[in-house]
Image (cartoon, rainbow, N blue to C red; front, side, top):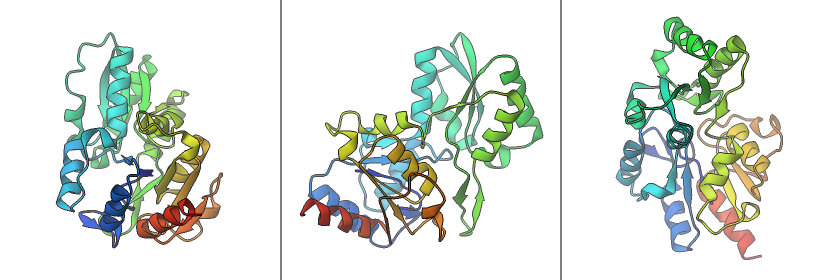
Length: 253
């Protein structure tokens, strides 16, 4: 079972009602879990500490983020990163200064997105640097409860300007979902994804070959999301607790 975090397990620093007991129920049932987050503002250590403060203990290998996937890509291809990411995330890319070439890495830079930084990244791309997008989400639920622009709009701007598509490291990349399942001794067809993003979480998981993908009506979900992307969700449920009940009801059938 793959679980998104923001909007599924928590909103900001607050657990979503029923989420912590739901994770505990899944643990007790022995279901192998992976937590798959497209967040590109928080480093891994901060995410694990945030979950621990909520009563959810997550081992390092159980959490997959686009930044980790990007670091592995950079090492594998021998590239030095030119970062257009949130300052909190920059430390994740330390120790990669010796690559033979450049790769522009775009995440959710927040207030760091301005003409100067975007143009600098564009010039690196125009000079031949590889193009990596940590994620291409359209929106995220901000601290004020409203939707805000996510990194996808800025990735699209650079893609338009340089005429090249990026390598997408996070959801909805099929490789991201399959990497999360690696080592779980679980076929993709037997896995379930739970998310609040009908495009990246749900349609992405189903396109990657997962057996089911549940859309929760928490987090960034807005009425009608379930009809906006293809493939559509396997089911639409109230929250993670309801998703857990959906899974157990079918396991018992």
